[in-house]
Structure formats: C-alpha cells, structure tokens
Image 1: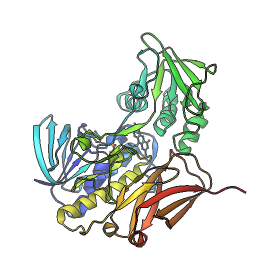
Image 2: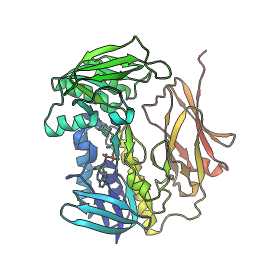
Image 3: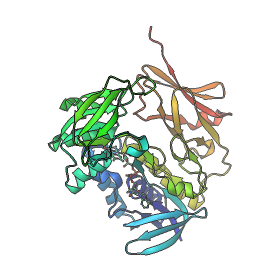
Length: 419
Ligand SMILES: Cc1cc2nc3c(=O)[nH]c(=O)nc-3n(C[C@H](O)[C@H](O)[C@H](O)COP(=O)(O)OP(=O)(O)OC[C@H]3O[C@@H](n4cnc5c(N)ncnc54)[C@H](O)[C@@H]3O)c2cc1C
C-alpha cells in the first residue's frame, strides 16, 4: 500500500509529490500516461513561465525540468506510460501500463492532477463542411513544437485565450501567415501581455465580438467565414468576412479532465467543472485531493505549483494523522460579478495562517472593490484597478477573519463609479 498515489505527472503532480515527500511521506507513486514527466509544459517552449515562483523567465520545459530535478532528489516512484483507468471510493487505483500491464494499487491518500483538455469544434458546433485543417491550438502547438510539423500556411485563429495568442505568434515565427484572431466576446480571454507580445507585435488583427460562421473546403479548409455578433452572441447577417486560408485553430476553452473524479463519486462544481474542494484542496471524498488544472483552469503555472504544494502537504497531514479535527466548514458563495471560487468550502480551523482564494469575474471591470461578506457583514475588501475574466484573481483571507465569520462567505465585485 502506498502512502500517496499522484495521478498525473505535470507541474501539479510534480509539485504535490515533492511537497508530500518533504512533509514526511516516503512511499509515494506518480502515475503518468505520457512517456515523460512535465505535462503540457513540454510543448510550451516559449518563455514567461516561473516569473512568480522562481522570479526568472523560463520556458515550459525548463520550468518542468526544475521540478523533475527536485523529484530526482526524493525517493518518489514514477510509473510512466501508465494510464489510470479508475479510482474507487476506497482509494484503489486501477491502471494499465506498457511494462506493468493491468495493476490495482492501494493508497492511504490520492492526489488528482490530471490537468485539462481543449474544447473542440464539436463542443462549440461550428457549422460548415468537415475538411482537414481544423485543429485545437494545443494540438497544433504539439505538432509544431514537439513533432516538427507545420499544420498549415494561412491560418485563422478562433478564440483569444492564451494558447490561441501564443500560437498566433508561433505560427508566424514558423513562416505561416496568421490572417486574424477572432473572439466572440467583446474582450480577449487572454493575458494582456500576450495580446501585446503575440498579436500587436506581429500586426495580427484581433476581431472582438466576431465568430466563425462557416468552414468551407472539400478535402482541406479553403475558406473560413467570420461574422460580427450582437450582444446575445448571435451572428449579424450582412457582416460576413471571408478569409482564404488552409487552417483554422481553435482556442475556445479548456475543460478539466475529470472522468476519474466523477467515476469515484466525488462532487463536481458545474462552474469550474472540477472537484468541489476545501481550503487544502481536499475533495468531498476524504483523503482524495485535487490540484492544478483538473481542479480549475489556471492561466499561470506558478499558481498551479503553489496550489499543488498545498495539496501535497495536506495529503501528508491526512496520512500522518496530523490534520486538526472538528472540520466545521464555511461555504463560499459567488456574488455579483464572480463566476466561481476555489475553494468552495473553508474550514477555518484547518487554515494555518491565511487562506488563498481564487476566482474569476464574469465581465471586464475598471476601478473596483472585491467585497468579502459573511452574511451581511463585510469582513474584507480588496481594491483592484482592473479585473478581466481572462485573468484569474487571487485574494488572501487571514485565519482570524475566517474564525470570526459565522455564516457563509460571499465574494462579489463592486465597481467604483467614476466621477
Ligand atoms: C495547450 C496548452 C498550452 C498552455 N500554455 C500555457 C502557457 O503558455 N503558459 C502557462 O503558464 N500555462 C499554459 N497552459 C496552462 C497549463 O496547463 C498549466 O499552467 C499547467 O501545465 C497545468 O498543470 P497540470 O499539472 O494541472 O496539468 P498538465 O500539465 O496538463 O498535466 C496533467 C498530466 O496528467 C496526465 N494524465 C491525465 N490523465 C491521466 C490518467 N488518467 N492517467 C495518467 N496520467 C494522466 C497527463 O498526461 C499530463 O501529463 C497551457 C495549457 C494547455 C492545455
């Protein structure tokens, strides 16, 4: 029996395993379906990783490499090329591996760190023909950066999330012509720095409040039709623009990879599509924790690392029996302007000093206050001069405040009216 099994060897799984080892667990297994550790970072060869955590600008593989090196200095066991098929309520992990065959391993605690996957054409139901040349941006990133293939030469990108923006630059650097980046919302879903560095610097136009309304081509994409949308995101007839292109890249959202979580009967939050978690990333199934993109989609890997270290340390506390008892929990509700929060429940007596709370807003806001209330009582406020749905927000709630809260906590946004 393992002390801890970590499912997924991306940055979340690596950080969680290292933290659990440091806290005293000695019998840890990481199970990774790929041939190497590092997760999605292996294909993210651009820089910009690690600014918060290492205070350095690293590429994705460099960032992952730092944690793989840390892991090598531990006795954590790694099983590559091994896919976890099922997790049961009594913490059995069913897996199938190239060298090991079908195995069932048991653990005192489990960390779910399976990352996320991309939404595809089918998920957003784009009309038109079904030719070759429609890729998710992540698949194209893998072709270009890891397998040495250029997926196309004249490209339209749908969605202005970070992966789409990064791929606009990447395809341009590899000699393709990126004709447009098209975004259905009236604002970009990506980080501001990526809009500047990946679109503006290469004169790639960004069409906000537009979407793809037709894909044309028999064998290969030949044209993409883009239309403006109204405030209900419905295409406006007469606004069509036709782009002659051979490739459409989709960057239209990420979905946490939660089949194992669901199967295990763990409560899922429909807003994050990840497990409902407590302040230490424990799920509704005691001893099972979730962290990284499987819990909620992150913009920056640095936050994945910090969150996963908390999950790893908490899993160690669980196994070593050092977690405090009396887990009375406060629910965290979303108020005006807030789409979701992680965690969804906080047990004040399990908070060491501060509780990190992450959330996203549902609209662009200027000068604003983040209000945290318990019932009708305001317990904290945080000023921000800008909030955007594409940028995950983070606030820190001190334990003393949480201990004073007698009712559920609500996080909301109040925009400061300009005079
Ligand atoms: C295409 C793409 C590009 C991105 N680019 C950037 C970027 O430029 N900058 C940035 O900061 N962030 C980027 N991100 C966000 C990035 O995903 C996170 O920062 C971080 O990598 C998430 O870490 P993770 O460990 O949660 O997930 P991942 O890195 O996805 O790792 C999850 C791991 O779990 C494994 N796994 C899944 N299911 C199973 C199973 N059943 N059995 C065994 N193993 C399993 C997967 O193979 C994978 O290795 C990108 C994300 C995607 C999808």
